[in-house]
Image (cartoon, rainbow, N blue to C red; front, side):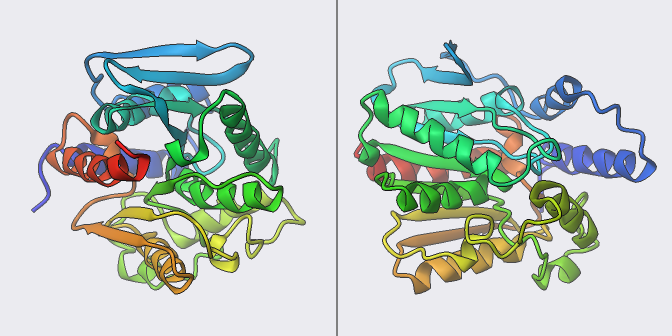
Length: 298
């Protein structure tokens, strides 16, 4: 049975869905970020530093390894989310891993369509490498569309000759923007926010009239995953995006990638946002940290 603390995530998504259906959202990015960030506690013994010339934050847990980094890609359907909405979530993860983390903003749809977001993610990865970080000491981590980007950024980076990172931590990954998964029907009455029409609508905003949801740099299920580092996927059992995670895990396994998938019963999309409050979220963070430490050589 889901904990009462995890119900805060369900209520958050239910409120967001009701507001969206009534078209009453204020459109205030800062306010939306604040509401999302309220789900997460402020972890102790973590410092945040702005990055000169970049819309990004360094997350520095005390006594963390300075030469190991989580490159963090926030979710938000390509229309929302930021380094501020997700900084505490990724701080919990970085602290548990014992590494630094970098969380950054990327251009939002509909003003900026694909591949603007991916290009910015690749540029940020290149910037990290130029700071002297070894690729084998970097793990990509991301939720929702950021989880999908944790894979597609690798594909794009490889296509331009950049080395691959050590691995990836996608949680509640959004990869199938055609919304074909059977879980859209099976979990229709359990998912508090997402449904097939919503995901397809977000895809149209993100892709624009000329983009394709089958572009391998949009949906990695159409890409070549061969040679990628290990992948650890987490997903909530009540998500309509459950099959996105299942299909990504299956595609990675077929490509010979070392992949692990954990499904958390009764959990909502990005339930990890309740880190520091809900036992399920804290358990998820601990599992990611146990997986990431040896991948990073810690």
